[in-house]
Figure 1 (spheres, rainbow, N blue to C red):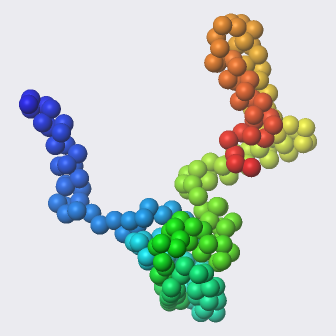
Figure 2: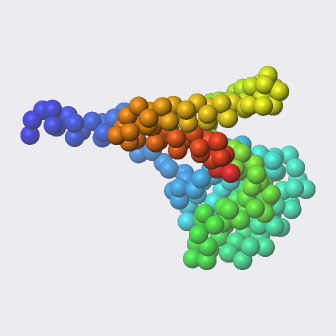
Figure 3: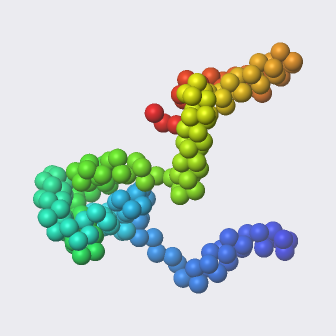
Length: 195
């Protein structure tokens, strides 16, 4: 075996050892459940037991007691322990009776966190870019007296560029037709958003 091949084979192993300090990294969320930052965070998940951090329960004893009662009504749940001081919610459940993803969805529903969980998705930079794009959209609509908005202008530009590309070179399949498709999707409101 050559030295380069040996180094390539050992690189991932050595890299993980260096990054983890030589220790095997503990994975607290062994079930791979999604975590909704700032809403319902999965702190630990093993079969039969899930610990959530629910910030809105922190310091709210009445809501914590109500959450405990609601969650313990689920047939698969054996016990729910809520700590209002830390906002921690521990759910012990029967793994044969329910899938952990379904249990997490039920907890989100019972706590009334569906909208907050959907809004928590994505990166901070992505949210800021969407906020900027929405502000630009409103600015264009305001400047044109509501005649145009940024979505319409981008759509028209893509459709125009697509028509130009198709007319100039009809055999150039993906570019012109793709621009037409993007433009019409944008114009019809399917521009990358889940609506």
